[in-house]
Image 1 (cartoon, rainbow, N blue to C red):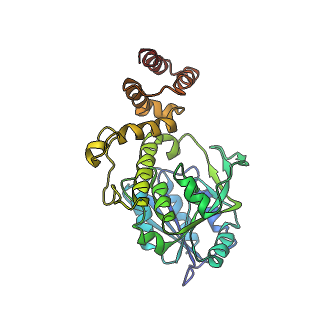
Image 2: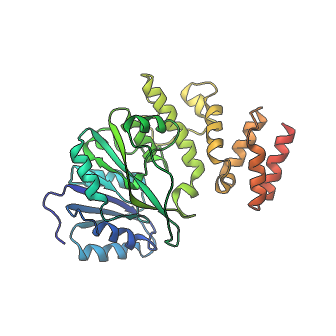
Image 3: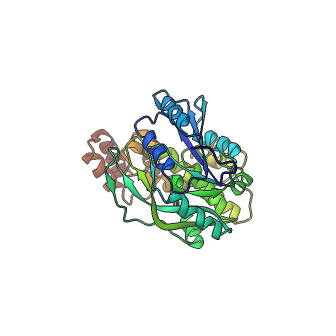
Amino acid sequence: MPVPENPVITVLMSVYNAERYVAEAIQSILGQTEGRFEFLIINDGSRDASGSILDRYAAQDARIRVIHQENRGLIYSLNRMLDEARAPLVARMDSDDVSRPERFAVQLAHMQANPQIAVLGTNTDELDADGAYFPCSDFHPEQPRDIRERLMVASAMCHPSVMMRRDVIRALGGYRAAFRHCEDYDLWLRVSEQHDMYNLPDRLFLYRRSPDQVSEKHILVQAIGAACARFAARERRAGRADPFEGTTALPSLDQIDSVLGTEGLGARMRLEVIDSIKYSPDAMNDGGLALMQAHLREGGAKDGFWRTAGRLVKLGMLPQALSLSFDLVRY
């Protein structure tokens, strides 16, 4: 199909070693009932067959434009595509998910009818790693006020399901490099302070759950970044400067008080992070256990920690369970 002269939507998808799922993701975009889009895809240094799959689809449909680059990560890739996009609206897509055929048509109609909305998400159903379908019983909050409130606790949007106004996102500086693996959450907090965000009740997106996804493999880094994003949002909402503006990396929780000139902030953030990761075996193996033990050694509350130790036993992580139990008794 020829590329529209003036596309109304630019689709943004970054791909890294996604040969198992990327064809299905692309086909779900090409099958949209609303076809006035250009499809930007960055091959972010994939080492598998992803690049050749992308080139094959680009040869078949002129709406697809593939950019091959060395591995630079998702944040760089998204910002590059925001700069390259020609349409006023950008739609996110991930290389392992599936968009239902009416997704763009429904989102576009809503964005055109509600110019005050800067970011429009949808509710979702789920796929597992093997493609089995699971209807989802959870709902994202719909109204802007509810989304703003929810964001101070956790994310309220499914990132790859959103459609956004490109000029708004670029005016806010796009995705910030410091917030690796939670770049969307930081962006939603910043958008919500100046613009309306909304979630459609329609389940227009199939979100894939698998052990290899970023939210599972990097849950500890994600939780630390989310705690920093919430702190920055509280500072901005209080009329103070964003402490992470212009930074490319976040300080560790041990360093944050000395870097920011605060007292006790690192300990409070550490407890926030622990609440987010204490049932994740990946996080326990990736520094989460050390955070919990540091919390206990400083006299922190033990609420829920015995349950964590029991869960570690059930997961076969006996040395970690014993180490945590020893500190629970000792401190």
